[in-house]
Amino acid sequence: MHGLVNRSIQCFVQDNYGQPVWVEIARQIEIEVSGFESMLTYEDSLSNALIEATSGLLDKPEDMLLEDVGTYLVSHPNTEAIRRLLRFGGQTFSEFLLSLDDLPDRVRLAVPDLLLPNLELLGGEDGQFELRVGGPEPRYACVLVGILRAMADDFGALAFLELENTSDKVPIIRISLLDSAFSEGRSFSLARPTANAPEPQS
Image (cartoon, rainbow, N blue to C red; front, top):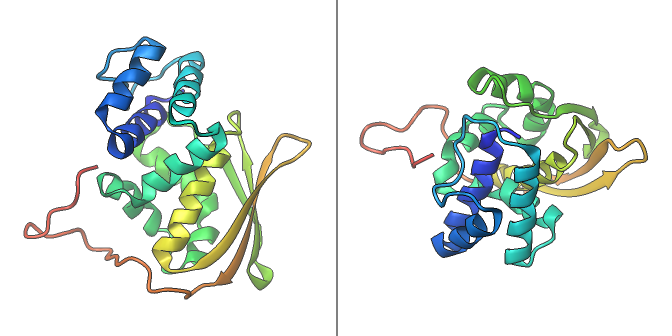
């Protein structure tokens, strides 16, 4: 698995639960405390061990853990660069959803060897969407649910999301957009912060 995925889990733990928790996870999976390099590739067995150990230590089911990682990637100040990349998808949550088909290609421009799942958005009538998540790693769908929930909040939209695992093993995220202007949402500008207002760490 790409190191960026493992690194995201590591940073999620460090930023939300503290360095001592990460040190214990590193000990359990027998890696250095410095952890993972974002641009390297690791054996899937190590990534699986990372998810299992983190899930066990935090007493959190794996699907809930991965969803929380997705939320973290959008909402935490240290991951502002990811939020900015996603916000370029549109001015509203609906426009953002309609841009998801192109997201894997956009991400590959920055990280060419990061294999994201293929995304196919269907529907849209009456605010009802169906997002099919294809690819070799179905657990990415859990991360994507967390990202979508956080992005709905970011845009100020009220949306209900439900993850379904189909018989053909292609996860489907059902999205009901109940109110596109439910709240004010978080401020965002397409212009990068000026020297007087530095961008948060990524």
